[in-house]
Image (cartoon, rainbow, N blue to C red; front, top):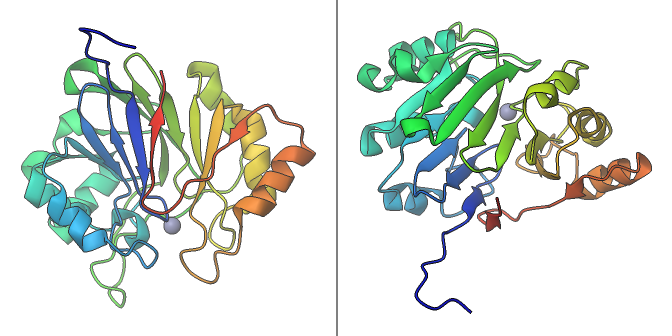
Length: 257
Ligand SMILES: [Zn+2]
């Protein structure tokens, strides 16, 4: 029992479906990644956006609408700064209207670069992903160049360090991510069709060797057929030490240091 001590809160992670996550650090900073909250599998998207008071950073891995999602609305409402690679940031500002003063050089980088943010509480490193990154205002409009898609390594001071793969296939250079960062939590796409499916995702986990892995980017649309069950089988087949953690839509978990 604790008497006279305030227990420091663990980092909290919420999954909204697809690749959208909220991180609340033990210091109270709020980060949203690929914030498509009004996606087809999260019923409370609009209410959740309305309830968002504080957001410090909005991180976007690439320009597709299932990842940019509600970023602009959230940025305007909360004055969160946009964290993205150079070309993507420019496209989101000029094409979709993210406030340009919230997308300056402080939070804009590129592959291999690390941004130290929020007084050093957060460090974000952009790493490659194999995908596309065009930005479209409407589904029928031609897409605007958004550079190369990225994954992101989000290192929270005092741990944990989280690797969000973005949308990608498996590639052998994923092994380099853990040469520079000890990954505690890997958020990995498993849905197939537009990204790697369960078998290739399990191979990606083997390369990165995180403590825990959380699957994402599945079940949102019928074509995203990869399942956590198939992913679990593929992880077991490889006898990996990494622990699988399957989150529910809208669920919040605590991430110990
Ligand atoms: Zn996607």
